[in-house]
Length: 168
Ligand SMILES: [Mg+2]
Image 1: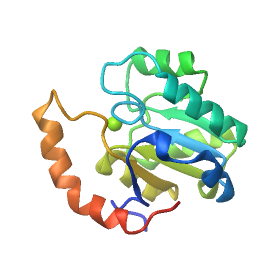
Image 2: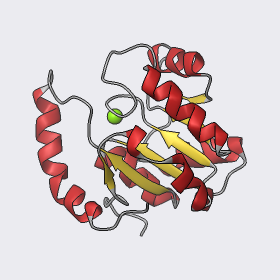
Image 3: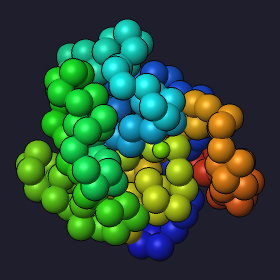
């Protein structure tokens, strides 16, 4: 489904995505968005919950990878370094090239890869175009930016469709 904006399930937060279940489905690589997926906007460091989730993933032989659209080194890169995971900026989501580059670097196929993100028209769409399983999470915090509420409203039909076809 190359241009589908429909995710494979909507999860309350990334930590609700069970590493054991991912491993059972043959997943080896979790590409993750940063803002409103792993932490709220502007938060510079991983929370203890995210650190624990990353460790659970690793215990299942799954690598967490920060796939960022950021064009400048800075917060996202610092976040990845602090968490001890690989980072790729300039990913250009929803274009395919950033997803393909990340999978090539990690030696994984699309069938072994999921994308976790909070936005339909970047994270989910790009994953579907790349053959990667898109897992949508609820944005951690919409407050602070009216544009985010508008985008969330526009995304709602796709969220509802995605809730009916969970991957896990
Ligand atoms: Mg985001």
